[in-house]
Image (cartoon, rainbow, N blue to C red):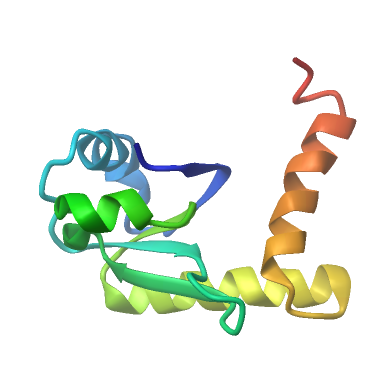
Length: 116
């Protein structure tokens, strides 16, 4: 099962097909021209991104870190990564993306929007 960030970043081009694409990826179907942005697979990097078609491989799916963004095409994926890192830096004064993304979810919960 893929892990998705609750406040998923979605590129402008990907927005129209985002729900269908997420559904297809969850079902293990092949999705072309889309990229997923994930938390880095190691501590030295901030984020990773790769073609969503790689998620067709069962072995890769099982080790895939949390998906935080969805983009259509390589250029949009690069722009989305840049946006996430810039937001992180503006908010915290550093590039610790993991902490920033966690805080975004906590802020939603604290505002009452995420009451359970």
